[in-house]
Length: 393
Image (tube, one colour):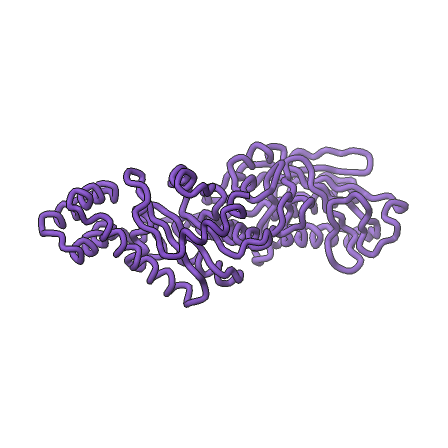
């Protein structure tokens, strides 16, 4: 199998465009390529596009290349406009900060002010990398931009303060297909990246998003983490418990790693709600529920059915099923569905508690599209009652 091609983050693109724009502004000469070193130590040789000159500023763009990663921002233009700040506006500040600017890069005597322009989202909720009201340009990209622009300022012996405005022309439209609206980032995409390099796998990106959402919930005052694999049971939870499942943290298939994050972030408890097709795997100790990792749904159901007296023919029928909904139709026919569900719940809770290492108070609800709630742990209903307003807020 051929090795997947790596790409470069929006943060790397923003830093490269900023460096090129600064160089063109101060030197007066066009630049068609620029090189930066990412935090991972990888060189990024970027092609510079769409050069625009105005009195006192230069704007250019770098096209995002996410490699073989299925990234919605691949192909987007990441623009940077660099402008000289008049001496009277900078006021001689050591950080180059002035009122009305988005933010100033940290560090002594920084001469780089970083702003977010069109298509870059703005933070509206606490718990993210930047404070509420700031542009969604994360810390590492800010550091990269500052470093690359400062290098040019020093090389060309310029002591002025400069403003760097990052824009993404299609950012607002692209953001509709990201987690940003859920996270409280409005008006565009985020400029992100910790290594500067896009690894050609989406797994880490999903885990990073889960942790961001959990951290945000904690910052908003939630002490119980409400998690679910997805929105499959949204109607069930709304109708049964008056809880908006869409506001839960979506853990996808990464139940075990999500529990680890919940413990790390200092929550006191969690409530896991999910469809039997996902959560029955947890009863077997499977903490990554993706089908390529493991699939013993029918074997687990059949094992629980054995303990409840199912005959050989019933077990054979269950093992031949393709879906858990089909298997449950057989359990109901045999009159043992409720007892089997409770056995499965007991094993789910055992494995959740074991993963958490006794650090969390845990509740769980398992449901079926066809049959509604199948089982709930002892603490689940009380957790919902105590925390419904926070989850729905």
